[in-house]
Amino acid sequence: MLFQGALLDEGVISKLSARLLVVAGLFNVVIWPRFAKAIVDDDRAWAGDAWSSTPQAFFWVHAVLIGTAMTLGVIVLVIGVRSLLAHRRSPA
Image (cartoon, rainbow, N blue to C red):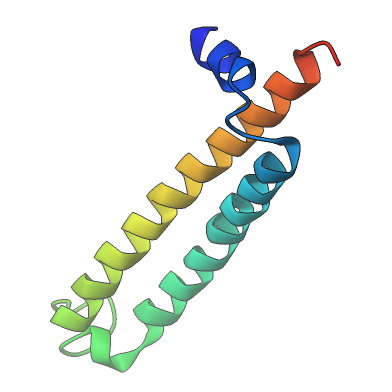
């Protein structure tokens, strides 16, 4: 693949950096869903009872934050994994 070749030919991402990206991506993928659960359970997120009333601004602000963080976390994880796989396939 062109991306993987360019990744290694120019030495853009080292093995250490790739590992750091994987750890950062995993951290985001594991932590943010737990935070989402806490937001859904928070009384400030709803006008009345959870899931049976309208979500408040508190809910929507955190939903956007969590969605953005999860998206970036998955992107970082994919870049890290692809970098590690490219390093594994390249001749030492």
